[in-house]
Each structure stands twice: as structure tokens, then as C-alpha cells.
Image 1 (cartoon, rainbow, N blue to C red):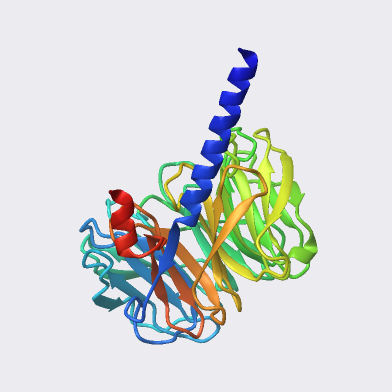
Image 2: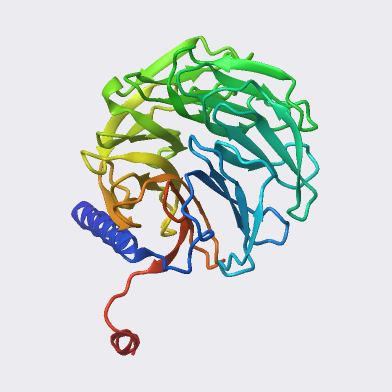
Length: 387
């Protein structure tokens, strides 16, 4: 009997493993010349998916202007991923690196925080129908590379974190009405932070910060003492990794948060948390000469496991499917190898139950990719198999 039970367990494990592998192989990400966000080749830095006009359809907002001022745009989804209405966000051209949707004034609709490189940052307030009015600028002018919206002080409203390459990173605390009169800092004055993740890493009830650093600086987890002081630092990775993006998710399914780091010049890495504020172990994934500039995490094939989407520069973008086996991710490429994808986001654009992908390309058209089953044989073959 014990041997029969063992064989049953092994058979079930093999079945689950094979089924999961097939699920990852059966998804592809398709686009065509009509599946673009606008017609221009802008210097785009970021893209976000959110229902901005309250019609139940996921819309898209794009941040344009890496280093040179350009116009930011909103693309409204008319249903089934038809983005037939485009609207400028604001009147000024700016050097935008981030356009982050969040309900900043607590009125139930999504506003947009815009982070600019060496230009004033701006809040755009939504009237509920996708019409935005510029509020007062916030924060000091700095070398912003990303914004993260989260309730960092846990007082019930959404705050803004700003990463600044080569300068002090900033926290802007919300007064509840979309004003940000109080500023704090995190990291050091010389950090070259490109991205920041937010997670309660040590499970003490306070939100900690995970820094993606470049310019020969080590990445770090900053532990929050509950008063927004981040004196305790847990380094991870090596300075050679040149990390550009951070994502937080439970990759190995142990109910503890893990870190995904997107690197330039080396493989990307997964840093497994032990659930007690420490690091269990790390493992690489992707190309050894990878050039990942942006990451997103989500269940891309609806198998209950968290997958990793990487936007790359000078290489095809990838979806790394998680098959439940540590250090074994199955890559599916999408996009053009010569594009520079600086930003991406995931969401169900066509309401078919699967997560799709939008990409922000620098100096090339921005696009979206719909999540579809892979073609296995001809349509006649598939009908024959169903019989």
C-alpha cells in the first residue's frame, strides 16, 4: 500500500507538472500594426492600465518625454481593446518618466500623478469621466525615474514615492485631499535608484521599501520602523547587476513575498524571502546578457502561479512562465528585438479573462499585445481532435 500511494503521488506530481508546462506553452502574445497606442514614435518611458473614465473598460495612459519634453496621452478603450479615442493629458510638454493612476483626492475616481525629470511634478484630478484638470505642482524638481503610489504611512490615503537617479529619493505624504505638503526622504543622497517596490518584508505591519539601484550600487531593502525612518538596510544582489526594475510577488508559492529584479548586462534574479525579514536564497532567470528595463508580475496563463513579464532594450520582450519548479521558468518572447521597451503594464484589455500587455517603447510606436492560445495545428485538425 505505501508503494501504491507513493506511485499515485508521483503520477499526480508528474501530471500537474506536465499540465502546467502545456499551459505555459499554449499562450502567445499577439499584435499587429493596428494594435498601437497612437501613431507617433515618442520617447516613452512608462505606461499604465486603469479605468480612467469609469465605464468598466481598462484604459491606458502613457508617459512621454525621456530627456526631451513631449506630450503625455490617455487612450480610452471603447471595448474589446479598441483604443479609438486619444486625449492629451495636460497642455504642457514635459520630460515625463511616470504617469501613475490612483484616487489621490478620495472622491472615488482615478487621478494621475505625473513625475518629470528636472521639471515640476503635477497632479491631474479626474472629474469622474476621464476629463483631467491640472492641480498644483508638488515636490522639488529632481532627476525622477519613477513614481510609486501607495499608502506608505497607512493613514488611509494614497502617498507618492519618487525615485531620483543620483539624488535623494522622496516621499510625498497626502493630506487626504490630493495635496502633498509633507515630504520625507529614503535612501542616501547619492543613490542611483531607478525603481522601488513596497512590501511588508519583515511582517511587522509596516511597509518597507525595495530599491533597484544602478551605477555600481547594490540593491537594498529598507526596513520601516513605523515612523518612516529606514535606518536598517538589507543589501541584495551585486553592484554589477545594474538593476532597473523591481517587482514584488510570491513566486514560489510559500505565502511569503519575493523580489524580482530586472537587470542590465546580467541575468534577471528572483530573491526569495523567508517570511521573517531575511533572504532565503536567490536564483537567476532569463538571458545571461539580459537588458531588462521594466517588469510586471501576474498569472498570465491562469494556472494559479505568478509569471514574470520583462520589457527589454535591444532584445525581444519575454513572459517567463512559472511552472511551479524553483529556478525553472519557461520563456515566451513577444515584441521586436530592436525596440527599447522602457515601460510595460498588464491588464485584461479585451475582457476575455486573460491578462494582456501594453508596452512603452522609446523612439518606436507603443503597442499592446493580446494574450491568446498558441496555434496547435490547423483549424480542421482542431475540429477533428474535438470529435
